[in-house]
Image 1 (tube, rainbow, N blue to C red):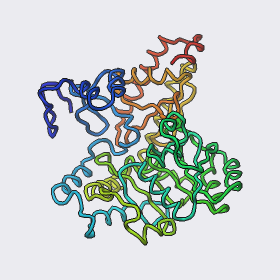
Image 2 (image 1 turned 135 degrees about the vertical axis):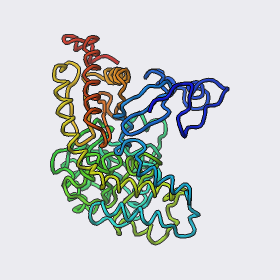
Image 3 (image 1 turned 90 degrees about the vertical axis):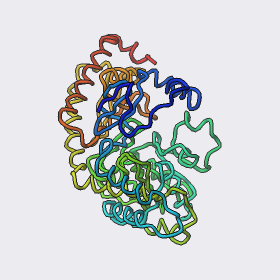
Image 4 (image 1 turned 30 degrees about the horizontal axis):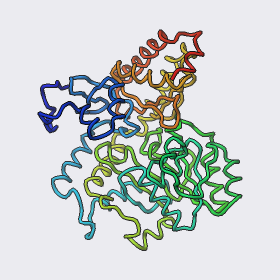
Length: 436
């Protein structure tokens, strides 16, 4: 669907007639830095979306291979939209005093596809909120020391930020939670030494590090982490906010090695990209304190019927449409094609790597990622940078992407790389690597 600046897309409220542009409002009321970032990427204003496409107010259409991993179903999946509209028209937000069916149905649906041994669910609104719930569960089990991985990303609320190990995000908000240790990702021996050297801990790890630049650990690493946690009495939290719901070509990264954590964090695609929802999915033992006192950790909109209807419909859509298998097949093909496209440009791109529909392109200099994103926007494609890896561009296209849309994505990457090559041809590596 395309729109022009003179018309309002169906279902979208008309813009105010006074007060300036959207950019002006960003500068006055939101973040000036965000307004500048919008300018950097062409000043486009998105107003509608469907499937793999985003439409802008000037009539443009952009293939969405970004969205930070949310759109595994694409935008506005009809089954999820129908479920949400139906719930809005009947009972969107609950009293929280009476029992309400949608949250029970959603929990049952989620547990039916979760790793075996996970039996309880705490619903929240964001990945960071799910992280906070998991930290609290660990505390109720006596695990006061937090161990996370270098490069890991778990959110920016105070507890989640304490284990999101990057000085850039932590510095303005210190002091954070005490007794937090980071160890190298993928290094089971380093984790073993840390767990042996102190009180019982809560270990938080991602099956694949997304914001660190799509870092895939060695085969056997997750099972080693789980075994070490059992040996040392540690509490294991597996952060699947980005990697879950089929993103890796399996339901969960945990499935790659048959791991069942104490708590698994879920988010991003859990509601089909319609409303915010996340979850901390736990064993009965990890959830024991929450089981005993339902007011121990609460949130006004936790388990809201509108979000639960979306969750149940999103899970059903993944199953009914085979989106996990599609993510595996499309992702493998796309990875091969992108590797072929970047092959002539070793002075620009070091590596393309990924699992399923979580793909990363590592460039030879940090400034090249920003320039590549701009060039892709010029080609009408949206991608993302990596918050903890300045040299890695990430692609997270939806599992509903068509062959023609994959062709468009690959062609856009090829055209963008050719534009960068004209700017930074081979033989000017020093200029490229130092570019910022």
